[in-house]
Length: 267
Image 1 (cartoon, one colour):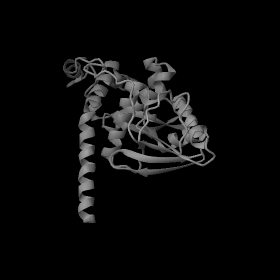
Image 2 (cartoon, rainbow, N blue to C red; image 1 turned 45 degrees about the vertical axis):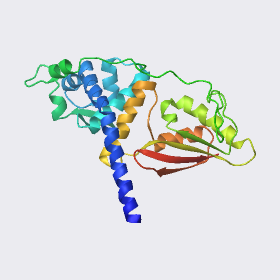
Image 3 (cartoon, rainbow, N blue to C red; image 1 turned 60 degrees about the horizontal axis):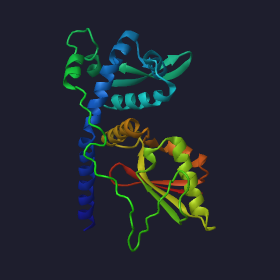
Image 4 (spheres, one colour; image 1 turned 90 degrees about the vertical axis):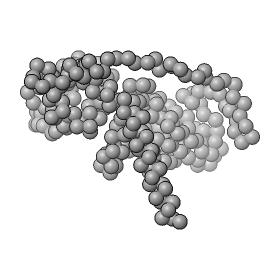
C-alpha cells in the first residue's frame, strides 16, 4: 500500500511539473523576443568577450531599479541554453559574465544564417489586457461556519492569531512590502503572550539541489513575478534576510510536492 501511494504521489508530482512547464511556456517565448528586441546577442557579440551584468546594464542605459530584473531574465535564459554564465577577471576581482551559445549566436544580426528576423516576424506582439475576460471581483464575503471574512490591509495590520498562513502571497510583493507584512504577522502571533508561528507556502529557489527541470520552472516563475507584479521568487538566503529584518529568530524549510516549499518561521 505504501509503495502504491508513493507511486501515485510521484505521478502527481511529475504531472504537476509538466502542467506548470506548459502553462508558463509562453514566458520562454517572451524572453526570446525580449533579447531580440533589445539586441542583447548583438551587444555581447560586439563587446568581443563575455559581458558582465553591469556592462550590459550600462550599454542598455538601464535605471538601477531594472538591473535586478534583467539579471533575473538573463539567469533564466542561461538556464535554457541561450547564454552561458562564465567567470572572468575584472580589476583583480572575479565576476560573472554572459557569453553567447550556439543558439544565441544565431540571433546576431548581420551574420550568415541569422534567425533574428524570423523571431521578430513570428512573435508579433499581440498581448491581451491582463483583465480580459476576468470575472468581476466578489465583494461582501459573508464567511461560513468555521471561516470568518475579515477585511483590511495586511500592509497595515493582521488580526491576532496563533498562526498565520500565507500561501503564494509573498512572491507577489517587493522585499520592502514583504518585510512590512512579516512584521505585522509577528505582531499578530505575539499578541496573546504565546509564541505562535508564521507558515509560508511558497517557492524557494535552490539550483544546487533541485533537478534541472524544477529549477527551470522556478526561474520561469521568477520571470513571471517580475513582469507581472514586480514580485520575485526567492532563494533560501533571500528568505532568511527577510525573516531576520522582520525580527524573526528561527525558520525551517520543508519541500512540498511540485515546486513549493513549506516554510515555518518563529519570533
